[in-house]
Each structure stands twice: as structure tokens, then as C-alpha cells.
Amino acid sequence: MSRSVLITLLLAVAALSSAATVLIVNSRNTGKPALAEEQRAIREKIFGSNKELPPIKEGPEMRPRW
Image 1 (cartoon, rainbow, N blue to C red):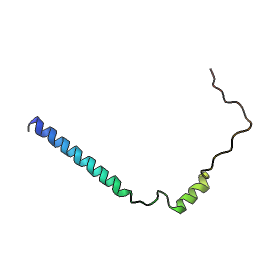
Image 2 (image 1 turned 90 degrees about the vertical axis):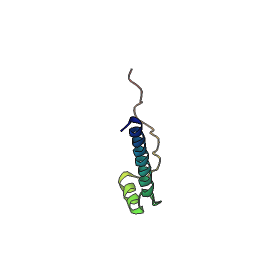
Image 3 (image 1 turned 135 degrees about the vertical axis):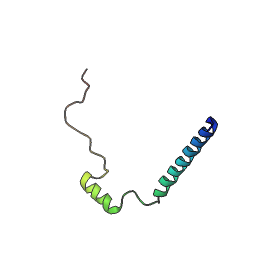
Image 4 (image 1 turned 30 degrees about the vertical axis):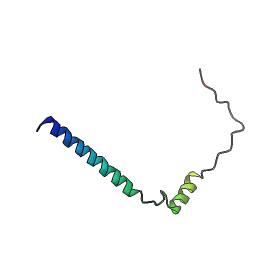
């Protein structure tokens, strides 16, 4: 095989594989939420909710050690 035919074949294979990857990844995103409500409730029970933490009022000052 000549070098130009080999390069053309490699480019075609790369294009087809990247197109297949995009199609596979997009087909998995069917619009359903990432977590079901049951899973979301369990996650919030274990890790807590997404509420902001209150500011720390007392404690040692955080300063760099030089």
C-alpha cells in the first residue's frame, strides 16, 4: 500500500470511531434526571443537603506558615 492510501484509511477510521463515540454518548442522555428522587433523598440523608454552612465565629486564625 502506498503511504497516502494508508493515511487516508487511518483518517477514515478515526473519523468513524469519533462519530460512533459521539452517537453512543448522546444516546445515553435520554433526558431522564441523573438521580431518581429516592436516590436524591438517600444522598441528602447521608451527606446532608446543599445548604450553605454558617460562618465560623470562633477558632484559630488561619494564616500561612512562612
